[in-house]
Image (cartoon, rainbow over all chains, first blue to last red; front, top):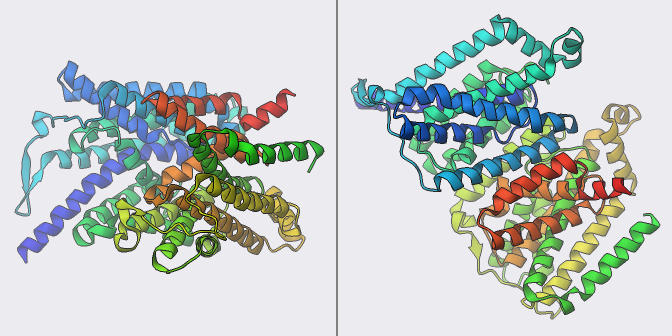
Length: 290
Length: 307
């Protein structure tokens, strides 16, 4: 009996770690795609850039925490440049143009990564402080996964605070719901949108740095998580932070238990969930519109 | 159709007919691929341009058409060339009808996202259901039946047969826009509320339209399977759904000849860039970015505007 419970708890924790990593990546997409309605297929590519930048920082400086501080900012700067000089010009053209443009950017980032760092998976060591493991319900559990868990909760809390309580958050939400009105009231909405894109890609960069030691850093990592991110953003409800948390949690558990119980068809369930949610409640679990 | 369109059309047909006599063998192969993919791109383009529906998961109909026809050729002894293609097309149409029943209730972004969900779901099932689909290994070594005594293994013969089948389908696509149902679809695209007010059944019309497009995409998929003589999950994955979008977009979504120009550019680009450099996807990415920035209406749109 004991061993069943400890397996169950460990499995839930494994699902939580992946789910929260997924949330970190998806939270940026929730801002950019969910709230601003900018279809950004390159979002996961920024996540991948975060992981590669972190690898490079570790090589040069040798300190994980410096990388965690600097790399997401570099990624965000690239995201802001992309918004300012490319995406802004095609937003009026609708999703088809954004799709082709950001897919092109994703190709360019992917090939550049292969060019610079090669196609082999790169090892990123876990920082010494977090390298141990703890006993959970009589089983060994790596500390680093607990770190992912708590770090993500911290990011969620910070984002919720900024969006709901600060003037910046209120401006962003107002600009998203009625862009022209907010412009008319004297807010520089293009700047606000650029800032949101910066925050979105910053979150992707953070997720990338965190993901480095957790899953290997390789050129396929962007494509692997991209669809999952869209599943999370959509299932949770476009633009809903709480929805993204819940959906990430569910997808994390589905992939964790699915692999344990029905390994062959585990991958199907996340998509099935997305289809069912969209059919029953198109606005997603926590969506307001639709 | 305007006079200019007739001239372009007849010129295209003449070029297409004399092509196998003048072109080297690998050119003929690429030309066949372009022709087959043109129909696929045409169905995507019509869905958006005539129907106002943005599909993220168009590979479902193409891929299931390919799989259904290949499974038919493998398991039904003596299944003819055309019957196999028809089988694939009918299966794709059936799936389009069933998925469409859910899809027509959606609009805008949610429609696109549900097509993505369906695409991923069906791709995952095809990938994992190894006993039937072969999974990663794909399906090969299926018969290539003769058609009225014509040996389809001969590239030129296969080219002409594809040309006739696809040409007929493209004509049907063009003709559809002139039918009452085609007009209804376009009126729904421009304003679905008003279309409903004047008594049109919006959902039923969309469903019929989706089913027809599924049928056409299925034909394209089945022919593609015979062209490659091998299929794997790449015919039904997200990359295929993305490629069809590129083809339709590069050519110009607002133009009848757009998918033809787009698939030609796409096939030639991927072929030549990949023979010329390993980093061809980098150049392809740059080209996409440049097209969106400087030719947002596609190649045809830019040519028309310059005139």
